[in-house]
Length: 319
Image (cartoon, rainbow, N blue to C red; front, side):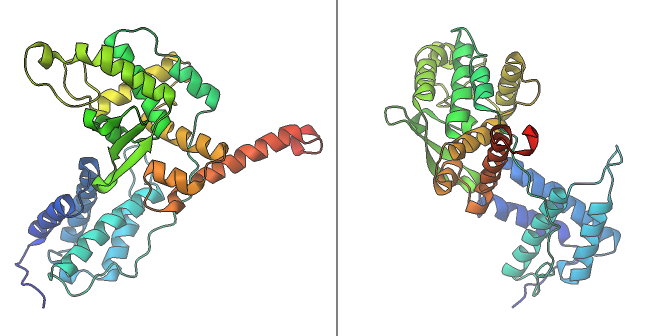
């Protein structure tokens, strides 16, 4: 039985859907913000056409919205990438399926709508030599130097996302076992191994760097349990971590190519290059589907081609 929908209830249903995404699906704040932007844009599209009830939306309306979204241009005259339009459809589909599941509509108009094809991009990983240069760019034993070294080592060793890294608490670390507990997308927990250099860097930071940053402890108060602290003694933010990695990349002579996700890509690529099973890499990265992880096999194939071309006497590059 379909629930009664009040006139102009679009805002109320969007608000209920946002609460459902937070409580039931446990989406991260950044993901929630992306859903909100896309659905605000969708709601404006519907209202411009006099639609304020999700039951009045049909498949043609959804397709028209996606066409309009794909044809829109930004201030520089550029159209959105196919991935942007596909992401918008994910948000719209989530909203309409929520309306059906909660009894506010009988039909989901997105059922037969397919997202635009998104070209499979190949992650831009650093070479192993570039990673070594990056890790060597942090020198000194000041508290922030020890913290920054531990951050770079952990990002590369565990392939963790930046949001997972800054959310780490001390109870999530098992340095003796070389394991870190992280909470990924949808608050899914997984255990990630880290190697000896990362374990040593984190241990050194916890012993000599973190106590100096934890000002609340120095003042006799209970401090944050966060692993990585900022200069004021609070939990390090995503923006702060991003700046640390970017600055290290500049000092290593890698320009602006380096950001936290590049280290995640590099971890996965180097694991595959050295023979790691793709299922193991999937588990380390926390991918819901192995198809997401398989993009790293394409990276290795490209490198295989490059090595072949350089080494084989009758390859194209040697003729």
